[in-house]
Image (cartoon, rainbow, N blue to C red; front, side, top):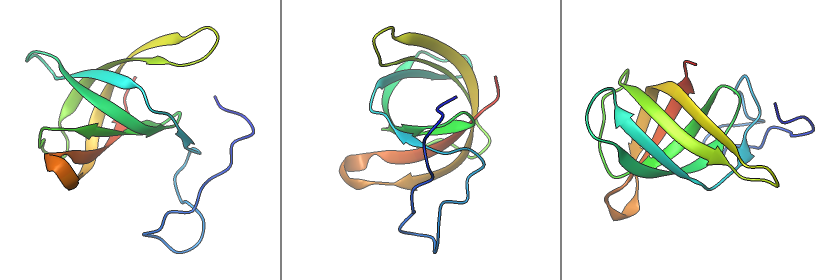
Length: 105
């Protein structure tokens, strides 16, 4: 999907990143909904072919399925609609949560 990108070191891990797909830094607004309820708004931190890290104000359980909708920036922005599963969540400053999402579609 994003050729030419290389994995980046993770301060919490020794050595290079161990994800299946390389991540690129993207900051864009992401509409998300926990399956049926009303949509909420979060902000992506990074994204790959396999998933994304999403900053949100809501605590959600691991395994929760989210409906995601966002635009990839560029000369011709690409609108993406996908389902994702919450794989992990960590509290951050200012009552937000970093949330690891694995794309299902």
